[in-house]
Amino acid sequence: MPEKNVILSIDQGTTSSRTLVFSEDEELLFTAQKAFDQIYPQDGWVEHDPEAIWDTVVTTLRDAVEFCKSNGHTIKAAAITNQRETTLVWDRQTGKPLYNAIVWQDRRTAATCDGLKDKGVEDIIRHKTGLLLDPYFSASKIDWILDHVDGARQKAAQGGLAFGTVDSFLIWRLTGGKMHATDATNASRTSLFNIRTHEWDEELLTIFDVPKSLLPVVKDCADDFGIIAPDIIDGNVPIRGVAGDQQSALIGQGCFNVGELKSTYGTGCFIVTNTGDEMIESSNNLLTTIGYRLKGKTTYALEGSIFVAGAAIQWLRDGLELFDDAKATEALAKSAEDSPDLYLVPAFTGLGAPYWDPYARGAVFGLTRAANRADLVRAALEGIAFQTQDLLAAMAKDGVHPTRLRVDGGMVANDWFIQTLANVTNTPVDRPNMLETTALGAARLAIISLTSDTGINTPNVEHSIDMMTKKVTNWSPTYRTDRLSKWALAIKATRIFAAKP
Image (cartoon, rainbow, N blue to C red):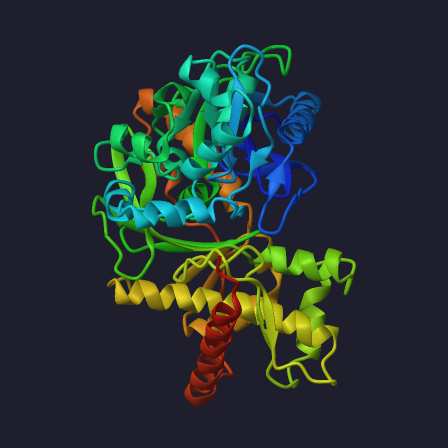
């Protein structure tokens, strides 16, 4: 293998950490991955051990460095993309987290959010942040940690604590505590960052009772985030690109033009549409967010969030033990194509957009004695496609009408799933031949940061990536309408059954 200049792209996800090595011409050279445990202390609670996150990141990072050394590659920079909204608070002196990371899926602060809605502050939050008032976002999670860890509020008031989403925690640790920073995309997911003024907002901090001293500096996505400490890896490697995973996928898919859209199928599913310099305020429970910020210029996006996508397949594999490998779902779904209608609503941690129901839980409708594991697998995959259609329908009501759906994430390796996705949404689906577009997006940001001083700009990284397209087939308009109607009934029944306090 010829020697190359490379970028280390750290992709810290919900179920594993990975470090990928990209050449400066965006060729994927190497991937190291290590999973970590999910922690479920109570119904609706989801946590991660921060030290497990850290250990898996360092392990995969060092594996990637060893690969580079063995092949004579020169590491020019590192980049980070991360699970968003997941919340950590740590001691500034020791670097030790006060509590487990509270994961984006966690719903423990639903009652807190309901109480704030009763106070009439939801419109203020929506106007300033583009977000709904929901446990999904970081602010209520910070408030919970400060209220439930002994001495935390007092120490925070004294300036002794730091808050971060996962990117900020990693930057702190990787730089040996020298840099407490985040990027604009991650900041925009906290419910504390005003996406109009591009500042931490005093009124929002008061609403959520979060001291400003906890907060990191907010930088552009392609920026200087410090140098990785030599006791972690040597070589004075700078961190030059950071973005939340969904925004990073938007960049990796090359959605630099207004109206271009990507849909990522990982643990959850997230559709993000580039809206340029226009902040589209949704009337249909979608989110206005920052797509990316480069050289101080903000590109906005409209987003729909599904909490459970690949996590449903993981549940079928690990919880019900219906198969050993997620790759088996394609053959199982094909074998069930002639089975009766079965609908699986994977609301394991509530429903995201466009419903935003934190109390909903998973349900299966249409079970018969003849139903088998293949039917359940098909129903799970179809349920994810139906949820995608729910988001596209909401976007259409907001005036966004995509003509193609660019997809990425582990689930889209399944040909049956993406063909079903095309049929359900009645939209051609484009799948890149290289699926690691989330990590690629972060690497692109580092490339932009490294080359901006020499006059090489974003057109250098805006090229198209090779696509394989699934066209709409098989489903008649009558059949599609019938299936969507039954799905809507399944959602309605799930929400009616949901226990409300």
